[in-house]
Length: 300
Image 1 (cartoon, rainbow, N blue to C red):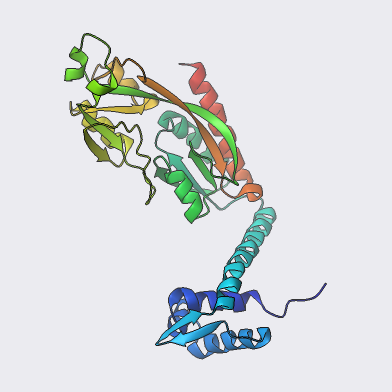
Image 2: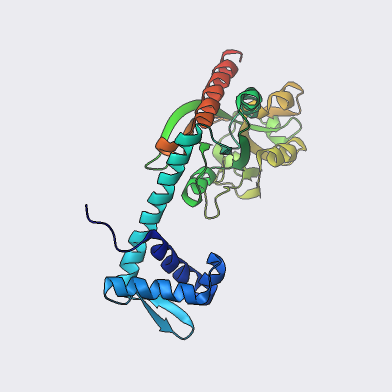
């Protein structure tokens, strides 16, 4: 097998020069001298036999060939990093840290019980818990490398297991005007009232949770905020049934009598962000989540 003439480090330096906008900026980001960065890129171009960069003003710009090669090199370096992480996972046998991204619609009691069961078995694995809404989980996978994402959306190319069916209920405070309606409420009547929706946590997301084409709408950032606002008597919302138990039992909230759509159910998936590199701590947590989901369903 022919050995490569160009090293991964050379491609990494080239990427930094382009991404940071120049040799001085790349040198600072890489903690190298500017002369070292310049030499590395010059040597790379010499080995390839043609220029990859041209200097316009004070900024380094890729040539057409440079753009093609830089794009391929990004995949190459990512594969190398993934390979090292896989080797590290196999060597250690247990993740030192687990990044968990959870859609806020996932039943909170289930999550808490699973985490409680996980802690004494975790062998010191630190959990980073992040919350997401709608396409926020997909956004987290696209922009980073979380170990596990609990979401209703499975992006193409990711392994996932179904883990729970999440139920959403249309509710309003007991004294809300909608509860005075004699007949079941249709969408036209509902659209005249203020709706509280939960903002999609993806930066470019538009899938606000429980969204109806209402004339009046307030948008909040979390299930808890929506619950507190609706309980106070302001507006109505579709909220996760698992988070409504106390409010419904104490009659702070009541389910709306809609012609259709009072309850909505959709599957939630456990998405393995690192695929075949998923470690034993992540797999253990998924097993505990599945156990608690089954227990939660059986007692309801």
